[in-house]
Length: 445
Image 1 (cartoon, rainbow, N blue to C red):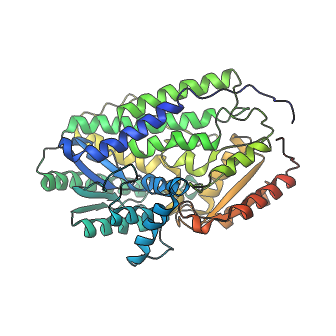
Image 2 (spheres, rainbow, N blue to C red):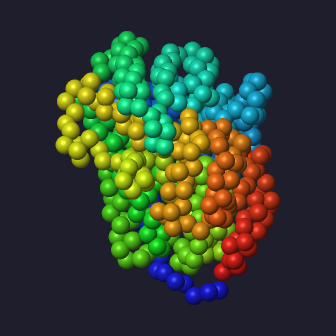
Image 3 (cartoon, rainbow, N blue to C red):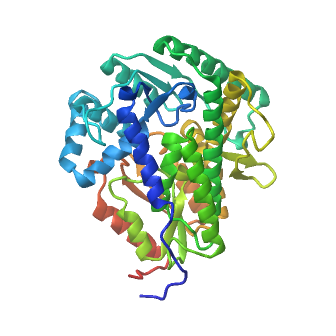
């Protein structure tokens, strides 16, 4: 075994991240008993939108990942869930998160214990075509109302999208936000609190910008975080970004990560090679990151983990993405419902790079991946050809060609982020070990 190059230490915020995550899922289970509105919807919906109500929201994609992870602990129950979806007639080429969620709903088994929570209505933003239908199906099964917003993000900066088109998109979404609020008031018979809405929107800006700053800190050599660890942290922005406890968590996490950078505390004490991935990982098979560690390789994250709920803004001068500046940091005060609606629409349109990748792959996504290779000082890229997610897999082979043309070592492996039946671990490990060999690396331990 080679001598360690860097000091390492456990992350102080690790347990707190798990505590907040479980608190959110417990609040969902108890919401109806406590008189809260319980809502179902997608994680990349405008989840700050219902914060004007005393509510809880079960967002689907991370829940689908939790069902997938169940395979490690209770494979029999996992198979019961996915087979329930298939027996109901839903094909295996649908979003794997959606299939896991529907199986849990159809079996009436909540992954975190007890029956599946009974929701009051579904609220979804249709940036992903599959997900628009996802909550239509849920509403039909549960016989509950459903409101869907039509969301189309700004195109990548490489496209030169006009300000006129951007303004039309902003106006289109703002109008839908106002319509959704009126619909929710009518559906629930409750009054929407504008002050709480402004607070929720402001929290979303803070939490997503702070997560982007954590990701930027991971440019340091040695990297203070590895992707396996980041997967525990990023999910809080996905399921709870309008929450004050999530904002506070990310402030503390950023301070800890910056301290690790200053003191060269490494995620991998043997770090000698840096890679990234692109899509969701196979949630039931995160051991692939342990394999990388054994070669002294650290994955600094993924286009997915950095960009799904990261608040990013484009630096035109440097042709790169930086952590987005929040309206409050710009000195903008939100005073009214309309102020908050406009700020939320603009933030969603502007900052989410994964959402853009789902709608527009092509040159913009390639540029973002190249930017990550450069700014995070990468030696290679690993792309998960993910059969479970049509959106994040969009344009992958064009990305491979562009990376190889630029002389960047690149590998692919086939799988599914939420269905272990479509993941071959021995074959995947063999491909990774071959890739390590092409990088000139031998196992350290």
